[in-house]
Image (cartoon, rainbow, N blue to C red; front, side, top):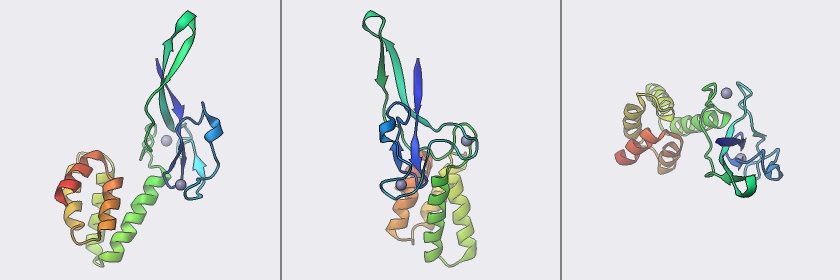
Amino acid sequence: MPFFDVSLICLNGHMINDKARHEPEYNSPFCETCQAATISKCPACKQDIRGREYEEKSGYMGQTDILEGYPCTVPPNCRLCGGEFPWTEAKRKAALEMFAEQIAEEAERQQFERNLADAMNDTPRAGVAGKLLAKQLKGAGSFLQTFVVEIVSETAKKILMEGR
Ligand SMILES: [Zn+2]
Ligand SMILES: [Zn+2]
């Protein structure tokens, strides 16, 4: 039976420890990289943020061996309540700010905001949103392009990379 550990993540989205329960010696109240506070529970529903997967195997003489799964990645949303994690909001806001710095037109900004929200969640509109984002980002700097590619869903990411 597989079971899951708990992830400790900083508010800016750096993974601190995806084995917060089994190896608490790596836990830290603040992020070494950016000094932001760390959390292991969803701020909205207060449930643990899922960490690394383990597999329990019965070993020699009835002992239980525990096999570690793959390191887990930082999730954008809570899998239990669907809420957006603080780092997702922070990244979206940063992208919007960068876009606003380069594009003055308000209508275009609003479109960008809507497309970005759809592209970050794997909604049915993620593909279309990815295409539109690629178009909107044509004139933007490469830093913003790279930043957006990193924060959108896999579906939108593929389309964005093609459209570049
Ligand atoms: Zn951090
Ligand atoms: Zn939640």
